Image (cartoon, rainbow, N blue to C red; front, top):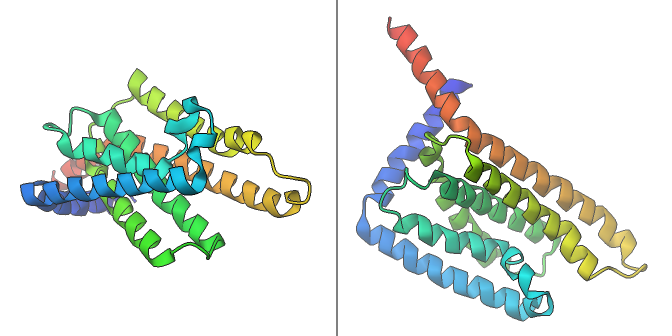
Length: 216
């Protein structure tokens, strides 16, 4: 298992060097993500009606546009090994946002599925490129804050907003099973992503030890 995970990380590192080593690709990604974030925020304003929620919740509602916006900060980093907790947050939010959207599309066919899936697949691929940068991540107070922020975001998504716009009694039979499904799926996914992010460093160290023993 360790060998498989290390192989995946090495493969991601090769692609990461090709992409992040090219300033023109970086510039294109920054411009593309900026446009994607603007379109995403506009969608939440026009369709979701973010203005109807209390202002202190605005930063927690548009998950995907916020993940895209955070990616821009990742690309502007001069030393991507320095801001490891930020990178952990971007990794979790990017993968979470993409998979959550896939679940939404699967349950609400009225969405423009092709464009939505394409856009969020690009978000997912970009988030996965961050994984090799977590090799040196150590658990600090900032790491604990990122974990808290992730789980707090889940809580607000499913309980905070739900309580602000409670369903009618007629809607409950339809909403309740879907609510439970999304709650279990997304919280479970976030816990898995946190575990993956925190496990990269010890797994890589373990693989290096096993490789060293094999050579000796």
